[in-house]
Length: 571
Image 1 (tube, helix red, strand yellow):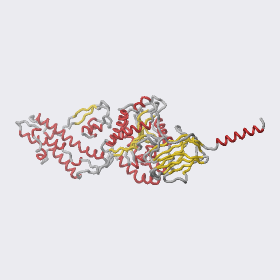
Image 2: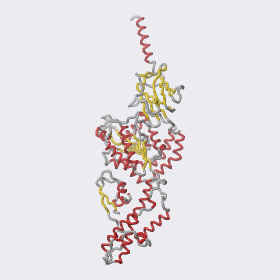
Image 3: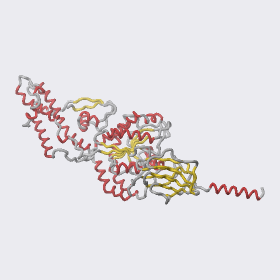
Image 4: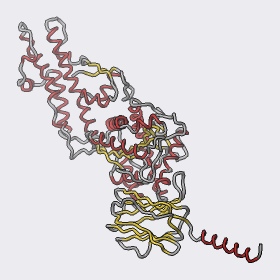
């Protein structure tokens, strides 16, 4: 080869190399997601780039300059929504300018993300309509001043309730009056009974002397049916329990995927909406969603939306699991482990937490400020107090999920789930099943099955609210009301027993007197538990306290099984 030909080839290769190195990366795709308070624009890249917000930007036009980058073909958005008016690229020397025209002033947050298992390099633009994040100092102040108090408000198992109606002295007088009624010393008995026809308790004609004791007996059912004024719910004095429902994943983060093309983010949102509807229809509960559509929310923001925006008492994160073993199936419930993300009650729980915690990397979240380390330390101090209650609520949910389908784990597992680490909330994560299992994928996409899953979670949450009523809430009012009912219920039941004794044995020497017959245990009806029923619902249905049902049936906890026969005190 001659020197001239050699030099020509050399300079051609050099020119080609310079041309290839003329730009750092290519922009391969452009996507957009709309959330309630922001719009996200994502640029897929073949490598890292340098970028800046141009000084030429105006309130109605944002210009992002990206150095040494080229477009792989024409790129644009199929639809423009929200505050976006238009979006296009302009050549800017060896780079590009992304020009975004808007209908209102937006606050841009721009950051770059490295590749992960689902995506390559990305440039993310989050355009906020208003500030939503609290500064670290503000968060620390909220945690130190309020979180412990709020946690105590939610977690107090036996609250001291304010009197909604009569004073304590009046209440004591009511109890004393009821006691005098049982012993036959109430001077106002004729006034109470006079409005009732005497034929309701027929007496033997030959024994008019027995009439007076029977009148006392007839008065007792009136005590049961006449509702005291204090049982009227005072909506101004008592608040609702706020339950935040977190539909896992969303937007850029699809979550797990099934063999038939299902995405976890869609299933979790469907179940979350169903659960919201069921909880919202329940007296004493206000249900809210952390996300209402297909968009991404960082794990930290999910907690903050629940706690600081909605002031939630309870946080339930809904997910659908995946595994390499396609036969893996069943639901699970998880609570937080305070020993760090690397510790868990099982290898399964640890791997799941690690996968769920990667959602921020997949969905595209900027790295948290290092000042949040202080917040996390303070959070640990308060979360420790709510952990036991999270485990209790989790056990209630597992008991109900067992009646719907199979369980992957029968115990509440624990691991370092980032989404659960918020002070002052009772928090659990529910894996509704394995989307990687074809049969469970079909069920999880079924509306009836979604309803049943949501119903199981609903029953578990409601049972917890009844078991551990927060002071000043509707469930605390129910607890106060039910504490009064057993006395009145026993009186009414005793009256029925007494009536039977009077009619059958009034002529028998030594027969029990009406007053003595009051102490006889009430009669029972028997109830066989069917699918979907629980102790809380049965207590409401038969208007008896849960304590009474537990004592009568010698239950160690509030769990009942399908087919189990319970004794219910008759009224």
